[in-house]
Image (cartoon, rainbow, N blue to C red; front, side, top):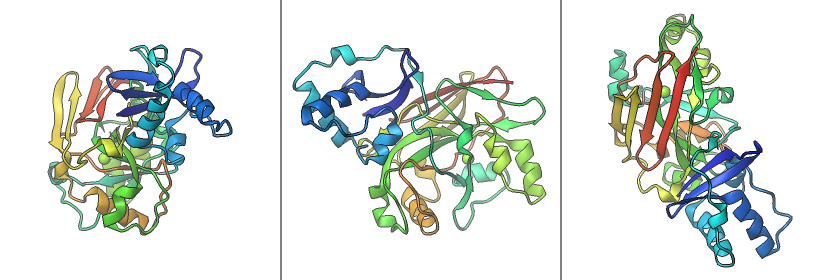
Length: 298
Ligand code: MG
C-alpha cells in the first residue's frame, strides 16, 4: 500500500491511496466510513500527517476502513486521475533529523571516515519540496549536490526508546533527497560553522511522493536505492549498507530528543553524490517506495 497527499482541482488537500492496483480518494472514503460508523465527530482527513498523528497509519487499519466502505458501495467513482498535484507526504514535521556519513563508501568519497557515533544535523522544514517540484539553485553558491536517502517517519511519541522496540514507533517510509550546497558546506566545516544553511535552502528537501506504511515494508534494510540525473545513474546502492541501522538511530536520538508523530529521520546517503545544475531532471527511486522526480532551475 502507498499513500500520499495531493491537491484536487479546487486546490483542496486530499489523501490518495494506491490499493489493489487502483488509486482512490481516501478522504472521501473516510467521510463514508464516518457515516457508516456514526462517528461524525471524528476529524476530517485531508493530510496524511493527521492520519499519522491519529495513529491510523498502518496498512491493516487503512485496509479495514476501505473494505468496510467497499462492502456497502462501489469505489469506482473515487478513483483518481493519473496526473495529480502532489504535496509532500508530511508537510509540517516538527523535526527533520538527518544522518551524516552513514554509508562507508560515501564517507570515503569525501576522504572522510564513518563516525564512531551517529552524527546528526537538522534540515529546515521550510526546505521541503513535493514530487515534481522545482529545486532552485541561486547562481552564486557554487557546487550543489543530490543525496538520495531512505526517510523514516515517526508514528508515536518516542522518548528513550530501546533499539529492540524502535519499529513500534515507526509509521512508514518515504524517499528524501538531501540537497546540499557543497561548496558552502565545505567552507563552513573549515570555519567550524554548522551545516544548517548549506542543507536548508528553500526547496532543498524534495520528499515523497508516497508514504508507505511500515507494515507494507518487509525489511527497510534491504531496499535498492537509485538516483538518475538526466537519465544517467549517479547513485546505486542498497539500504543494507547503512552503518548505523534504523533501530539504533531511533534509540540514540530518542535518548535525548522526544520525537513526535510525523517527525522525519533521513538515514544518510550512499556513494555517488554529484553536482546538479539548472535544467537537470533528477529521478530518485527506492524499491517498494516509488519514484521521486524533480527538476532544477535558478
Ligand atoms: Mg545526507
